Image (cartoon, rainbow over all chains, first blue to last red; front, side):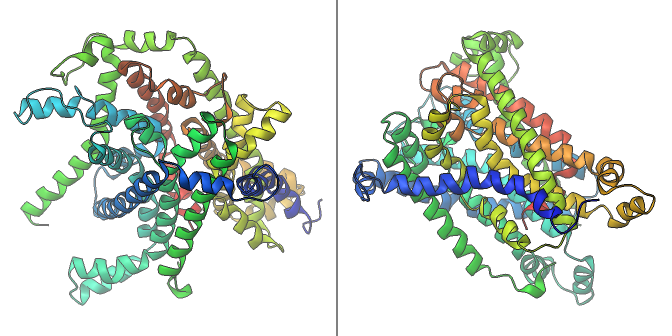
Length: 282
Length: 268
């Protein structure tokens, strides 16, 4: 029989080696590449990135998306989670339907909303039939950046609320029933119960949902491309353009480092702001 | 619940179901309607007559089959690698207390706080050099980096759910550690491992950025759709989107029992 002392190391060795090769090394290389100006260390790539015409717009668009999408998603997922909690019949079916978007790619989600929001699409047909508009109207072009913004918001909320829902429902499930029962005895209203029991005990789940969603939201890319092409610049889209169309790997790497710095900062902020006390952990 | 509140509640649940399902129905209409339905105004909300013929036309376009095949290969390899590498790590996390365990956990969690697909950028240079560029195998490697941490955490929670005593009983009856694992633990863990594998498949099947950066001719379906997006007619885009969605819906149905075990635990 194998010696248990080194057995665990043998078991984790393959995944450690793999993550080193495809996570840690490329991570280091991205950082090196972004500071490589041809002859040694240089900030030329960053200067070129910051000086690009699309850069301020891309930055603003990305942050605006995160700021609008995430609070709406968390609120919606909380409502859905509480609805599921009191559901007696059909819970399985409803849960499956609500989690379908979890398997839908961002590209497909963008195309779904393109079918609805394009000039002669289903939304316009509906608006035409109730007499609001008189013919096909365009929303998804560079003349209407606000409409395009809300199209992306809709698609992102449609696609990615499911993951928040699952993390929150998993969190709600481990809250002991006795807490709610005790609150009932003391005559607490549903709103008080939600604020004083559910929400505080849900903090660890909220924290992981927020971190995961925020990191992914800063990576938003294919939804935007499907809906508006390059009419709505975003950070990762710019990285893709610099890499694939301009063939400038240095500036693309600078964009990648920017995304990583933003993601890490957001993660640290959530960890600090939603500090989880050890005693409330399940 | 009082009657009006109950009514409000039921309406809310149904409205949220419609919010998920109606858009899928509509892209289905767009995909099945063909060229004529796309330019029709006002649109009809009922299924047209083109049906599967329109989807079949889409699949005959140069490159679509090849792209779908590449997606399938990349996703299958991702599934295989992330389970083969991730499940042993999950078992180690579940059964042993060892030095460096928390460092390993940190490494796994760290991968989730990073936009991993972005790391495909420096890999292009290396992949070109070693001949992995523009192959489904190369794509599957970066997709495995996305799915592996998840597979390790999920399988670790699965193994934790199987009592250690079962294994110990098998040892007493003369099984080796490996035999005990294969005959006692594995059969119990298999459905959950299958669910985790399906999830790795979906992660790869849906990924756009890394696949687009790492391929030129041997595109995956998502990468193919992304590159032809601006020049292809609308009904082709809808057909492509619809074809991307169908497997995902089925997969989520297949793993629905394990969704919480997976995400609930892996999010800790």
